[in-house]
Image (cartoon, rainbow, N blue to C red; front, side):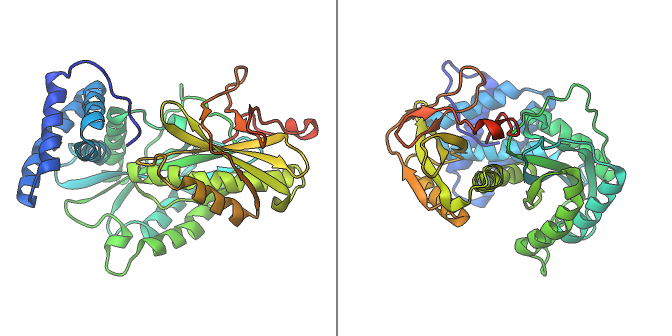
Length: 389
């Protein structure tokens, strides 16, 4: 997945140098015919590395380009992602694509990451094929609702997972997930869960409903929210949830990351309203930028009217190309006002990325410009998740 990268020192291995050369050639191409030449060579080179499990070479080439040529970096990142999620070698006669259906959820209790029964999978399959996928698409679903920590880690692991699910899709079956040794899921107030699947069609055919003449993304999302959300709700008891449009794995993951930022703010205001019996109009939000070497994120500290004590906090990370020049503060303010919070304090000086030494959670800005631990009143603290998004 595209992310901010740290440039590494040292020379590149020959294989990484070739990736850099191919991506640079594609970035500088002046016509579609030349594009196809570079694209074919790049796809072949990436497929070989994915099959060999050579994650380091892929990352070395990406890190190198991130520091010297962002256009070539974008070309390489797009191709690495697309080859990892398409399981190209699984069936030469088919286009196969790993897809994700993210679900945003918040709860005062543990948000489950859980196996999915065959009955629920069958219902999800019906609604995905009716509202999201093109006619005739074969679908295979994983029988587990994943937390972010449980997703395939890295491009090579993603490619292997896509191939396994792709074979299940071609056979018209679902994929049973071995949960033994699966990472534990951290306890957050708001978080994302992922339904994963693979789709297969004869090469060149439509994959999604919005590729058909009478379909649109908006229609698919509206119908999926109504039907898919109803199927997913029993898997997340005690949670408020919002579904994200299912699509290609990396694109869906990025969209979930972007949607999770305002969702976490809305969830926090709703949570404080119930936990402290405090309406949004009595909350104050303190927004401040937090830096490592560059701006990494904004943090929002919440206080209750009449007190400077920070009772809760939310992290708003920068995504993709966002930087100091992006208008994130205006976006944060708009979400807060939409939630009913009108007392908003913007702190403009640079804060360091500080975390609690004892529990590791982020520290949040207070109205007087200090960085503090968010602490709920004692009578509510025992019912609050330890880690807060």
